[in-house]
Amino acid sequence: MAAPALDHGRREFQGRLLTQLRSRYPRWSVDAAPEGFAIRARKERAEVEMTLETLYESCRRAEASVPAEISRFVAAAGPRLAAAESRPAAGAAALDPEALVWCVRLERVVMGFSRAPELVTRQLPGGLIAFVSEALPGEVMRGVSVEEAAASGIDREQLVLLSDRNTALRLGRWREVLAEHPDQGRWLFTHDVLFSSSLLLVPEFLSAIAERGGGEAAILVPDRGMLVAAVGQGAAPAQLRHLARRLYGIATSPLIPQVLITDGRTLQLHPAEAEPRRPWAGWRQVLGLRER
Image (tube, rainbow, N blue to C red):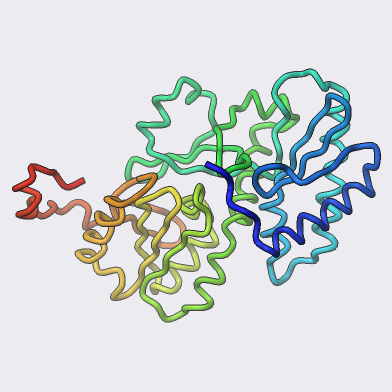
């Protein structure tokens, strides 16, 4: 599937970075990457790709100094370019530090991968697991092993810190959603088709929605690209469990049909999930279909 075209704001931002990088590193051929929101730099056999999504979201923050953020990014590209130039035939490209993001998937699926023991992971309730991944062009991602990170000069602690930072920045539009609709009982977050469910790994987000619920909020993650937060009357367990199953049933990349709950610091299954579910609906009985 072809990557979607960049919007006007991203195209302008990409053009600004192209100008900055070409000026700073004139001996490199620097162009827009053919897929995704990224820049590709080439010099003889050396090649480096730099994602812009995290930087773009960082610059969108109200308190951000855009020139300072861009200068940091351009300066940080120097060591990556030098390393690529020194070993142009080393095989796999070095990791892009700006592209490291927590990815949420079903634990039983991830643990079935041969590379699973090599990944840095975090356990989540409901049979979910988060692992460090690298966001690639064209809405693709892949898990990152400790060994791969070390080969790019990133130790385990840095891998986690970068993933925490990038995930929070990449998914930072949750603030706008809450600010635009402060009195709603439910909010839908679908900004990132691959990583919206990774808001589960953003402490500031969990704290914000729990605060709106007077210390507690419910969360649905029926799809990897979707998260629903609910508080007050919008978090009525019976309604949420029904909604969770319906969203899970139409999910493109399904995760779980269960309801989670947070106090702003921790995540766990909603107590209502311990209750038995309703028996099959009549039409499902006729068709011989089980509820998920």
